[in-house]
Length: 114
Image (cartoon, rainbow, N blue to C red; front, side):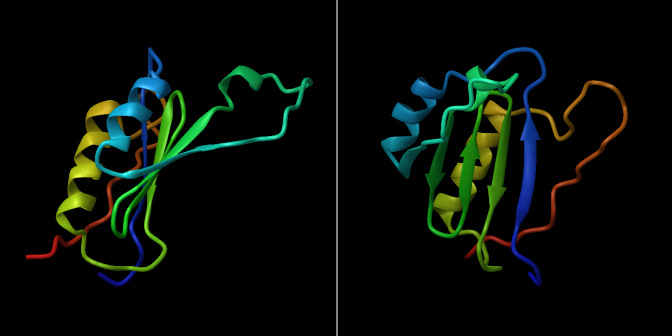
């Protein structure tokens, strides 16, 4: 693997229950809530909540409609990394931000430790 893994996944119609996801993920991963400064003028102020779950080399930044999966340094996924990735694919089943057939976001190649 030459570059760190980075992939974005989406939900289209409904949101993820971040409180429920936080509780579930905290059983296996390091989970924290991200605090953003309040901005009363923001159109999306209710959608600014985010949690971050970290496995061994993989980090998932979850919001209501989108998750960003990323690594700081290129490395093969551990078993925990692969499990986190698989769970995020279940929660966020789409690889593009819209149901329309454009803005494809193919998943980068990754290796898993043996």
